[in-house]
Amino acid sequence: MTYWPGSWRGTVVFVGASMAAMLLLASRPAASQNGAGKPTPTMADGHPNFNGYWVAPNGQPAEQFQRSADGSVLFDFSLDQGKQELCVTDACQAPNQPAYKSEYMAKVKEIAKTEFAGTTPLDPDLSCKPGGVPRAPAGPVQIVQTPQVIAMVHGDYSDRLIYMDGRPHPKDLEPSYMGDSTGHWEGNTLVVDTIGLNDETWLGGGIGGRTVYTSIHSDKEHVVERWTRSGDDITIETVVEDPVMLSKPWVIAPRKIRLSTPDDYLVTYYCDGSGINETLKDHYVKPDPNDRDIKNKCSGHRCGKDITGH
Image 1 (spheres, rainbow, N blue to C red):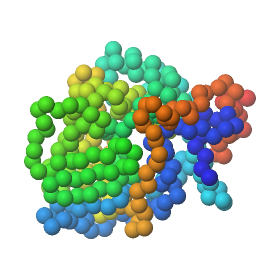
Image 2: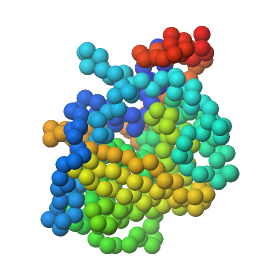
Image 3: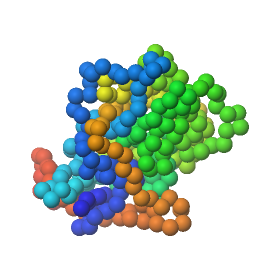
């Protein structure tokens, strides 16, 4: 059995699609721990081989979940993070957030006020919508590579095709959740250019409260990613431009994924996604003043105290 805590009230709370994908993978084997330093395999055309199933470098961030003797997993996104996330002034803005123009920053701050431990019912992720770019997870992902097209399959409606045959973006492109992606090689680096993204996704948001101010974007968003393989590791560098909402490009800290073990494989999860029946946000429980921090780790003056400090 697996527990998905969001707002603790003595109950189990479902907190979001992106976490669901991580949770399902918790039961799968962790990725190899020595991905760096190995030779980088290549395709017949000499370019790096991206084929395979890729996950976070250590399988799962150990600090984010705990496994009991019976195999149950407790995800610990608890109230210390929630309390910190409720701060939405410029003084406590998390580092490296998008540079929103003032009129849009006001909207972003209003959204941030509704977040608790990185989760808010306003998040389109909780309505089972695709993640968009760059929010679609770097991993877990199954990559299928050919000289003409590269497919990235996440199993959560965030799948996409990257066309490698030199075609331009369509001139009459209809905006969509994952947009239109074209790619080319610069040395051993795969450069992916994505446009045509609709405004129904977010730039980030979600797990752990790392992205308080990374929500809305316009349909003029333009994303350039640089995927570089070294041994069994891939490093993804990303720059987001949005001339409507951002005053300057947003450079995301590099993300890393690692080739998983041979017996590992992609696991999909159920999400209705129709907007008619049940969606993830139907399981959302709003924070309550009586919520208590029950996490197993504590430090300093916070040990043994509830969210009010008593």
